Length: 240
Ligand SMILES: CC(C)(COP(=O)(O)OP(=O)(O)OC[C@H]1O[C@@H](n2cnc3c(N)ncnc32)[C@H](O)[C@@H]1OP(=O)(O)O)[C@@H](O)C(=O)NCCC(=O)NCCS
Image (cartoon, rainbow, N blue to C red):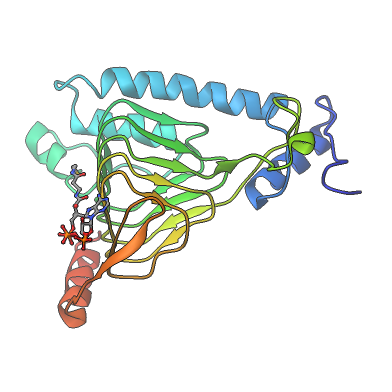
């Protein structure tokens, strides 16, 4: 059976499971099966809660973390609650933080490292995994698109046709300026700076500044590797 010939029967659990496997594997799949529609609806509800409650400056750091874990469907338990609200909040110093509003498709395919910060109005189309390394800072309005459509219009066939994605992986200690776009399948190394407004179309090596559309290396960073590794080690020793 060619990939194009595969069309899931929405009432078949096995077909829906195979369709979902294809989605995560970067193969052609259909996005309107009941399970995937339900997955996006769940994400919309979790986003609505996050974008409402976390936008309120009075909401505790613990509650914001709970809402984020729910959005990402991450079952990792939070640290036990402390009586003192300030001490309790301190436990989340290196927890990933996303400013509102945020937009994701599923949430469950987004993996954020410790200390990741995302400014407002970012979009993560996570049909395939989008993984962001620890301490990476993301400016406002940055878009990560792991979703794509067939180039051929007959296969694409509007909303009736199949689609496909590719994972996006970002290393530790990167910084994205505002309004960047990262395309499907891109892997970005450690310690990379992406200039504001760039469109990253290809993999990026470690410790460079890239900028422009398409993003090109504009500078290689002379990072002292021993000091850098010591910083990473120190963070890991603190459990981060
Ligand atoms: C990339 C950036 C950090 C500058 O890095 P830098 O290493 O100091 O780079 P330079 O300013 O020396 O620029 C190097 C070259 O890249 C170009 N360049 C820099 N930023 C660029 C961008 N965003 N898009 C296109 N080209 C860019 C410069 O014009 C320069 O080109 P030239 O060599 O032909 O003159 C900065 O330009 C930037 O984009 N900052 C993002 C700020 C932001 O978005 N803040 C929001 C909060 S996170």
